[in-house]
Amino acid sequence: MKQFQPLHDPRLPEGMRLWGALHGGYSWVISHEPREGDWAGYMATYCRDPRLPKIVVDGGPFQTLAEAKAACDAAWKAIRRAN
Image 1 (cartoon, helix red, strand yellow):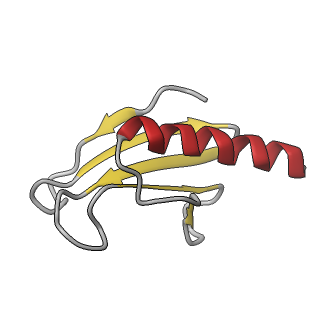
Image 2 (tube, rainbow, N blue to C red):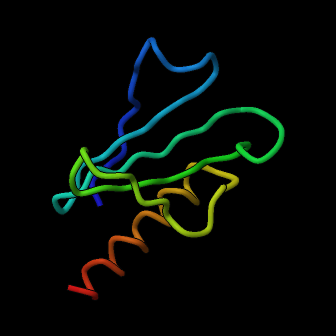
Image 3 (cartoon, rainbow, N blue to C red):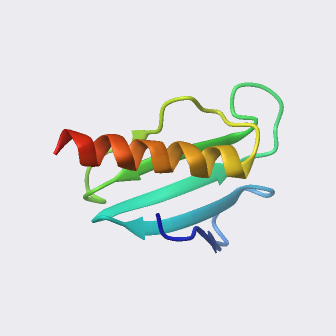
């Protein structure tokens, strides 16, 4: 998978961070919002068409960015096997 790059958007809530990659015709995004509770950790999503809902990568929230990237790689391999 291509390298994830930091995404900057002034509209994001304070402290929220995003990384994105384009690979295999899909847009991949990892987000991190440093809060306690359900959204603590890293979440990963992907989509083929930005007008459609994002698909959440199984296994999240992840404890590290590296775990979220590895989950994206695994999801990509599963997509390739299915096609």
